[in-house]
Image 1 (cartoon, rainbow, N blue to C red):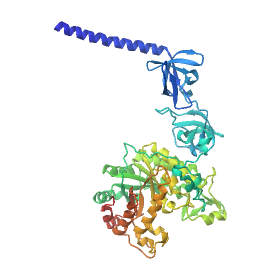
Image 2: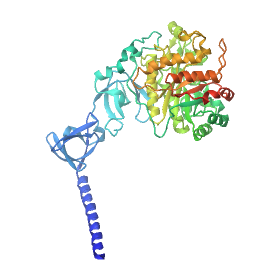
Image 3: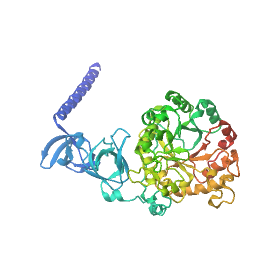
Amino acid sequence: MKKLFQIIILSVILVFLFLIFSQNVGNSKEQSLEVRFLASNQKEVEVRNEQDSILLVRGSKVFLLEENGSEAKVQYQGSIYFIPISNLVQNKEEIVQEKEMYVRTSATLYESDSSSNIEGFLKKGEKVEVIGYDNLLEDGSVSKYKVKYHDKEGYVRSKYLVPTKKEAIAMYDYDGSYQKHVKMGDSLGGGSASTLDYYPVEKKKFSNNEMPEEVRALYLNAGVLKNIDAYINFAKENNINAFVVDIKDNTVAAYEADSMNKYSKTNFKHAIYTKDDYKKYIQKLKDNGFYVIGRITVFKDSYYVMDHPEDAILNTKTNSPLKHNDSYWPSPYSRNVWEFNVELAKESIQDIGFQEIQFDYVRFPDRMISLEQSGIIDYNNVYKESKAEAIQSFIMYAADEIHDLDAYISVDVFGESAQNYVTAYGQYWPAISNVVDVISGMPYPDHFDKHQYGIEEVVWTVPYKLLKKWGEYVVSKQELIPTPAKVRTWIQAYDTKKDPATIYDADKVSEEIRALYENGLTGGYMTWNSSSKLSKYEEIKDAFRREYQR
């Protein structure tokens, strides 16, 4: 019995040694063969053996056995295949064989494949010469192409390019809705909805960063963070699961961000907190289980204009930055402004820990029509875009950069943007909702005309009626696009002083929320009260405790 056991053990050892020897011999043979890579102008390459054909992802490594005319015999994962020699290359740089592509969606041209610095802008329908790429994805597609466009070279995300001009100039027509966008016209100078992009945009879900299905958030301006414990205790007791916290508001910089020091030293100089102190406040919110959203005002930034008047909306009469509504406005056409705000957003995700970036003032100034007609306004429109095109293109650029960091993007819009036209300041609900993860209307009742939508009562005295009607417009706009964002709405959480003055108590606030939810706009709500006074939140806390989901 003992002898039999020894024989079995010896046999196992011999088999094991044979397998190792065979593998080493195989590896040795492979190492002696010439390495090639599958190349193509498409994601996959067709190869054949003696029986049939299969598709392999371009970039796959094979071993060259022999060449015969225009065909090569190769070994791939132990099997023999035949492939045209034109689909074999020696260098990884030659794997991607596209020579030219066309711009399907106007897109940012990056200086390099690893930064958000902007080199230029590609216009829909234009041809680009492909001169390289950054890397291949698992399915053989390219992440970013290196292209030459007129006199510029840079990188563009591949999802915005297509092989033919016909595909590039086509307008996406979801469920026959494109003509509905066309009919919106351009009555106010904000641009035509017909030139905007409605191609489906995948809504992100990050396994390491879960967004609540229903966000119930309090707004905190940066100044109140020193009292953070009181807000945390209030939120835990009153059905709140998230906070919107200022990163940068007009003339209020929350922390000493490196990106501020680089792009806007005046913002940096006036920052309220050090970077470390600010991070501790945000981390405390997260440690207590809250979803945390960072708010950045984009195109209303007086401090940035002080640093960079060349990027401002210009008053040509005075040859100086335009002061409008007591503030200076960077031009939404300026790519330097885009870079600054996106770099600030990225820093706030990576270094501070925000889970979502919410951009506010993503628009041109309102009440500008008469000034524009006077001819004294210079927006510095380098790329000859409409207002709405510039707004949508900025959001696309920002979304791409933020999604790369596994974070979400939301954008605040005026309530008016849900109407049946493109607003004078460039906001058009479907064009924005199609791109972002969350769209946040601001239908504050005291911002509407007294009898908006034909409502007999003064609308801010009957917020349920007003928001029920407004919500119907939102639903109709959401239906015009294939991939609408979640709707998470700002609600008025302050008393209105307009005549008739109206106290927004728990019942009035509850009416706002109920009207939204009854329209199916159940992505949640955020309380707008610019002072963030805890005493006001205490007054209306019963509204947060009520159940609105059916």
